[in-house]
Image (cartoon, rainbow, N blue to C red; front, side):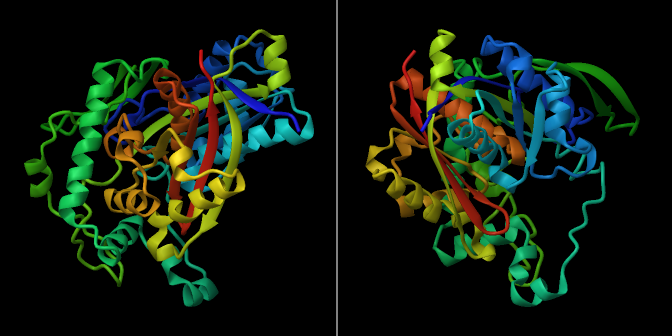
Amino acid sequence: MRQAVIVSTARTGLAKSVRGGFNETHGAVMAGHAVRHAIERAAIAPGEVEDVYMGCGFPEGATGNNIAREAAIWAGCPVSTSGVTVNRYCSSGLNAIAMAAQQIMTDGTDIAVGAGVESISLVQMGGMNLKHFTEEHLLQVKPALWMTMIETAEIVAERYGISRERQDEYALRSQQRTAAAQAAGRYDAEIVPLATRMKKRDKATGTESMVDVTVARDECNRPDTTLEGLAALKPVHAGGQQVAVGKYVTAGNASQFADGASACVLMSEELAARKGLKPLGIFRGFAVAGVDPEEMGIGPVLAVPRLLERHGLTVGDIDLWELNEAFASQTVYCMDRLGLDPEKTNVNGGAISIGHPYGMTGARLTGHILLEGRRRGARLGVVTMCIGGGMGAAGLFEILPA
């Protein structure tokens, strides 16, 4: 079987949803920008890309019809380049990369893009009514499918004894690691600045205006975070029947809403060699697993062992981990249960400090683990996350030296 290698990665900075630099930027712009620069970094012609796989958690609304196709055209690919939108909610970007790799490995595609995008600002928070309609039968047999993510995080904390103190301590570490990584420039190689226009609102007068901005870095990090400040935050109201009043989840120990896009160019190992390219890494495998929707955050606890078993590996064989920080409660639990070394896990922070554009995150984590793994001399890396609706996903990558 052919091998699929990742030869380049590029992404936008992550902008705060609603209040950040991408609050009026269409998903096709962010996604097309990331795809175009990933193609340029791969030193290939846009027309060489056969297909674009684009993860998106909410592909309805402001992203238009097929956001993958739109992104391909925006990036300068000819009409002969196809596109497919992938939705596995929080693992959409990782799933898109896996699908692109599998197409190369099994069906003869030479070059494909795996990517992810999310405009929470335009879709979830104001651009479109995405009211969650229930379905009578499912509401009877599995009502937790309509539980909010905050409720599930509260349940995980309560059920598995993850204290508020441990959650806040983890959140502080995430903020500190991201601040240190930004200061050291460890995200710079990923990010391609994007000039756009954002809507600003004057707090005093309420007037709104459009201003020119360039998103050149991740906006969400709070480097001045302290443990005392986190402890002082009130729990977010969880809603629902099982968790009417929150106890654990706050704005400080949960992932931040953010907008952004990320892309990777994949090709066959043989073609990369013929082109004289030095790949960042090799796609080795992907696995998913289902869990009860009411504790959706524990998905990695089942997905990771399934992935490792299929490849004859143990947790100790993995040099670097990226575990999406949807909530500190589920991140701490998954790390404990899987036995992950904190010094090898989310070494430059995660979604609590960086932000979480649902469909983009898996693609961002893939690009980051390959670049950071190369910097550290790591060989094997795993990207894993929980998924809304009660699932987990995990991807295995072999990291190649420069």
